[in-house]
Length: 240
Image 1: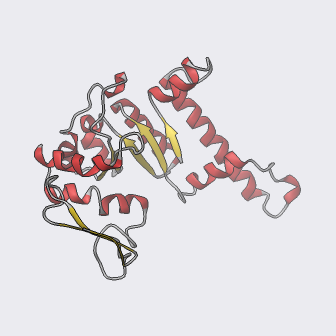
Image 2: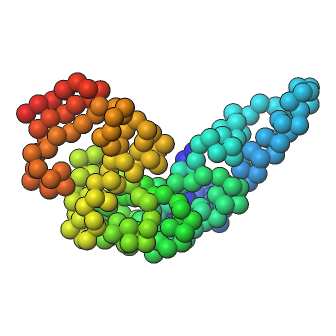
């Protein structure tokens, strides 16, 4: 369930449409309000499951949020600034739901807290112009800082925001800054699969998993090397 914190909702609704949320406080307030509505809706449904006459009217929005409260799907919290990241985590704790931080540009500033809370991050894009204030502290050093603190993270280009071809470049540059190559490789393979809950099918080369493979002519994190073979579902779809 996508939930956006920070400048995006303020710009889209506050500046462009002249309505709430126009502040960070309003954004978090609206999110909490809707989660409370969903909680009440879920409670009423449970109490009236044997008496449909008193059941609440069907609400598709609250039905979707009910999946969050039941932990069937996580909150995917768009947040760049460290204060927004902490706000998102506090809300998740308040309602006892699962959360993944999207972007987490300033996550390295509160990495120890994030690691302690065991909140994963889909981190990036890192090769991005600082086109809004909450990106001013963007740094390619952040992956190694997150890793050193014990934060579980996957790298993302936010495609199509940034082209997907930048993904191995981001991983390579992170290694240049001191990130362990194994962690860098995991950040674009098994870790994102784990965050998505599909690591039983993809993300690593193991018996029983999908036969989706890339074969390089050298270290995949060395951008001078090329892909020689692509296998999808056990079939060769590209061969140089």
